[in-house]
Length: 393
Image 1 (cartoon, rainbow, N blue to C red):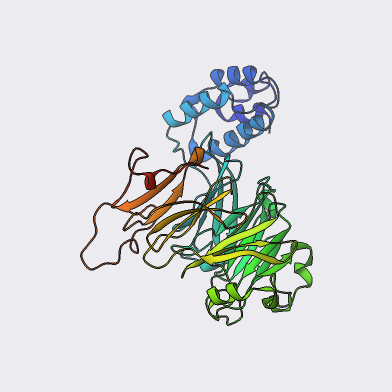
Image 2 (image 1 turned 120 degrees about the vertical axis):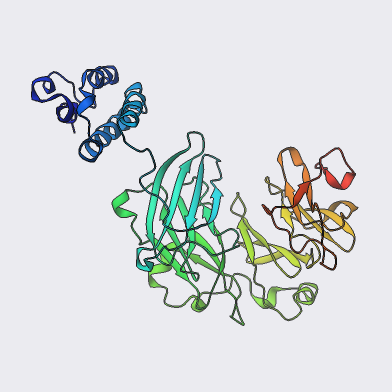
């Protein structure tokens, strides 16, 4: 759309022919807006063509003074500013991209189930919503779920748990017309609430079964093979049971190798994670081999936490706060456990925070009620005991 057509709404035909194209000089567009008769501006009639024109200008020149001037004017003349693509229901999950530039937020379905859920992608530096993936079948994630949205390393693709038993992959910044509902690839399990790990290359997924499967070992799925995949049980297990050592089998205690939370390492070589009841492991993907598997926690202690650089793992059990090498699984430092700890959280520079509840009710097992983000928790500063702050060895 040209600035002529946009301004004809306000100034009339006699003024329109003197105004430049929208994809021309932003300063000239600013002058055109200044010359318009804003007293006749009507949001219901004029806002959409104005927005389309400014969007076209932004594609070429970015946000200019013309955008800021128009924003001030339309607010003065009755237009309400809000993002056009909003969530229709509760936001259930969110995650930053690996580069830290983008934040993805996913929501459940609203009153109309068939309308699906929404995934918004926001630019952190500007606070702008830069893309919306709408109509995601069954909505995104579930209550209190973790790691339900995962990015590829370059943030070009995003994998999302939806319908509570599927993982779909979308282009993060694809055309709006191509982003309604259907993913470019989709993998599902036969029951509910799967775990998964999305490869940094955006081409592979490790799927872990949900709640009810007896044999829910991880399956390594290439997105190139998804269209021909009829049943995920036909896919070879990521780690053959016979490859596990006796010590590993003893830790599993008859249960299958299945992770409740998992991640793919940035170098693409490992998948690591934990099972909530008490153990964690690291898997060499190319070799399809468990490098290490050991007990790391229990129901009275916080879940294990990997450092942002993936070099170390913090875990607390049996009265000890242990820092292990995340590649080998071997301990590198041992500290006294923090009684009642609810959360282990790594920060920059190799610092580890141990979060404990500010108050505890009598008779409640310490640490079980409190989760990240809950009210009633406080962070002990690094100036306290050694177990409050841990630096890399």
